[in-house]
Length: 456
Image (cartoon, rainbow, N blue to C red; front, side):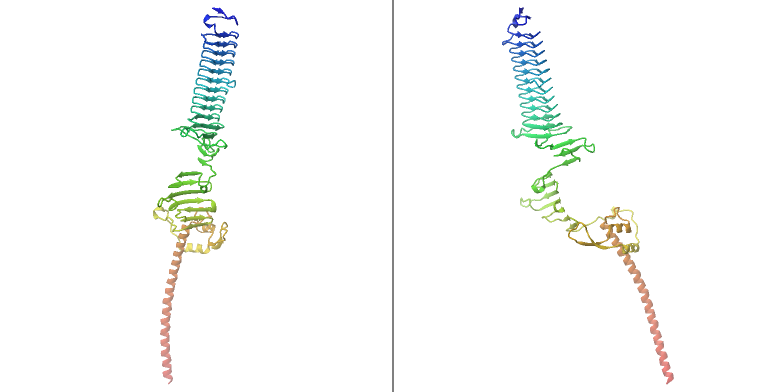
């Protein structure tokens, strides 16, 4: 044993190249370069060039490690630095826990930095955990600044949202407020960054990866899953933070600009269904000599001009709804199959005819028709009052008008038949009277002849 000249602690001769300056400090091991345990109750177990200057700090081994904060600890490795209280590095090289990384930890790896309270880096190279309770599991050149967020792996990825989870591959950025879950891979081109701006996203199971795209200059994520929607059901929003339907898509794009808010299928060479704020379009395009600009059948509903086209052929609407006018360039048919009907009841045709005779029929125009076109017809209220048809007294079903017209015609036909029978009776009576009159005329002529003969 030999007495150390600095603190008079007796240590073995093999520790002669080691310095223990702190009160109750201790060092051990055979060092190539001098270890320095200068902190209160500091301890260095071995290695070389290590410095334990923090109170109750410890370095078990390795080289050129520094534990400068209270209760800071380094297990091994080289060039590691712990400057935060109650923090530790297990191994690796050139890893650093800064003074802000209280209760931080680095397991292994190289050139990793922990600066957030209770943050940590497990493995990898040049990773940074600066958010409170943030964690980088592995990878290279990754950074987590969100509170209680975890980056599982990847290269050159940044996770800036709180309470989020990310597992990426290459050059990814996740920013926002909280609750982001990102599983992505942007390594196909290796240069273009994938950016996601998220808030309040909750996702259940994943298969084959999942990506959400957005832009950090906007204040809304591209995709939102809300299991606590307005009706306590799963609501999905695209480009909206507050979806109020099972699926809500928000976009300022228009079909006229060549882009729709939602499109299913190809916009050029085949079938597609497209929606935007102004119109709905469904098309089946049939090419002619490779040209898709003609020969297509389409359903088209457009806000501009109030036009609705169904079955567009060559730009001509088979059905055109515009303003107060519905135009059908063809035959409009109603189903009237006996097999689809029940509860048949007979009608009194004369009674129907009498009701029609009492119903007001006027000449009028639609309030919404600025052209001033006039029409003739009954009011739906009068029609319902007369015949008790339809639940709504503001509409008249064309099929009911057709049926009542036919019954009225039958009533007129019945009345005409009755009048014809009366005319036949009158004709017979007239003929009988005519014959009687002719007989009387003959008798009168005979009497006149007899009178003339007797007077002569």
